[in-house]
Amino acid sequence: LLGHSLGGAVVMELARQHPERVSALILAASCPLSGLVTPEENYPVLEMMRGNPALLEMSLGALFPAGRPGNFTDLLDDAGRMAPTHYSGNAHALSGWSVPPGDLRGLPTLVMGGELDQLVTPDMVRAQAQALGTQAVIADGLGHGFPQEHPARFRAHLEAFLQTLPG
Figure 1 (cartoon, rainbow, N blue to C red):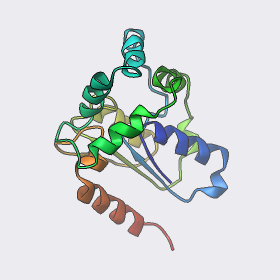
Figure 2: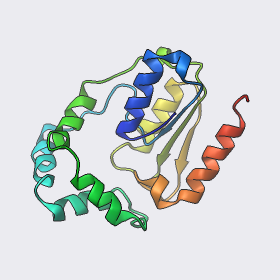
Figure 3: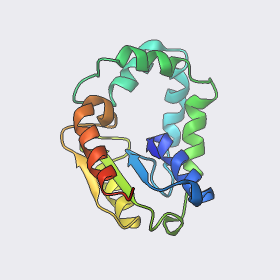
């Protein structure tokens, strides 16, 4: 299973609850194992994004410091369709979520992050990899949206990892 950002928490939770269904994890700029706390002063900004397309575009654009991907308009449209309760709701959910590293240890895992990521920092990525008993892959010059910023580099890491798996 592959999870990016919030999706990392989703796939880790699935692996924790149903280990028999998961043979490997790929965590890309994933929520840390201990959750991700958003400072309280950021919640009003998250709520303002809901009704302010320019603010939403600026915030989403900041996830791609190496340059907006070609499908940025589609990503922006998708973000604009997010359920109104999820703007701050997702942040609240991640602040209260965690998974014990021991629940995932032994599961082959690729942990990746972007060097310029301000949301899930390289230090967070390294700590997550260490807790899971693996090495972190940090994408030089890329941010939180590194899979979209440089898809070929992302794919190369995925293919190399998948080649290490049995079967």
